[in-house]
Length: 441
Image 1 (cartoon, rainbow, N blue to C red):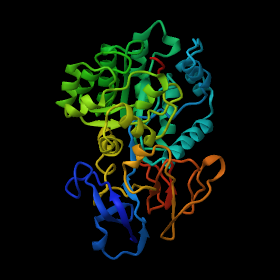
Image 2: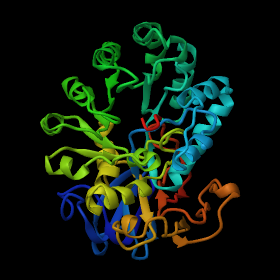
Image 3: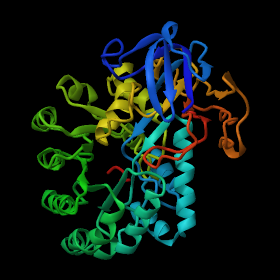
Image 4: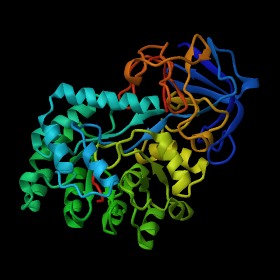
């Protein structure tokens, strides 16, 4: 296999304390050697071994590609008017999530595939190289299974979320809908998913219903994760910890007992600041969780209703500004934290054996993700040189190793030397640039 060395890295975030300084494993004046699709060596630039190819980072920072452990990308339709009314302080009586359900059911397979691919490219341009995708906008056996098949064409991290809300047809019979979700719908969906999820919240599914959904999924070999404590205090976090869920997502309203349970369990608290930003709701108290020793992840929660963003750099900036995280903590949570929330050890780090999913920032430090939000340019790597140029149509990067940045994009160039598509991570060319209820999803 060909080997490639990336040298002259001003600051390399490895997320391996045995390699570098602090929890980020930060190395200065560093180099990385990639062999095939894996990291083969990490160390000082002055000691880099000989390789077939060499890329000069020209004093820029390199971090692991972002790991997005929570997204709702299989949908159709638009809820602009709902958002505009909410931000304008006007009442809005349209269907909310039911609008998205209706549009998603009516969309063709090709339309849904194209939507997922578009949002994945958008996330890739902003540095996300691994992404989880949920169902949840079909709410019938046929449409939920279709959503999972579509998601599975784009990632291995696929989540069955038939229990997003009670389907409109079952509005007066929620227990009957739970029987559907845990019976025929699960039978049709389990072969296409790795995870099972439930929205445990007032107006969605109570603790007993959520337990039924999760235990049924576990019995079919799916791993649990939970939408928990977003809109109010409730049993979601405690249930997630009890059942050994990989992640409890949102965690906005937590009691001391909830925080203690997370600190003493293996469940990651995945915080989704885009939802609070887009609904003007109270942000989760990340500082409280971190000080208690809870493992924290960050995710954009891309969905059309409450958080229509795929930008992890945006979430990092919000987490630092409004959730009292340090820049180091936010970057760790967006990379290694996301990997922990997916129980992955091959992504979210830059150390030997890890996937060679890296983001090259047009800045000397990872701190610029919060210090200069939405400002730094993206670059391209071609024939060992870093340069800048125009984007493809509609802000999309052209295909292939000569791809260039999207104007106004977030800082980073995504590096993967192999052209082979890995379904667990976002596929791309040799070097592809990246740019970077109130309302239910």
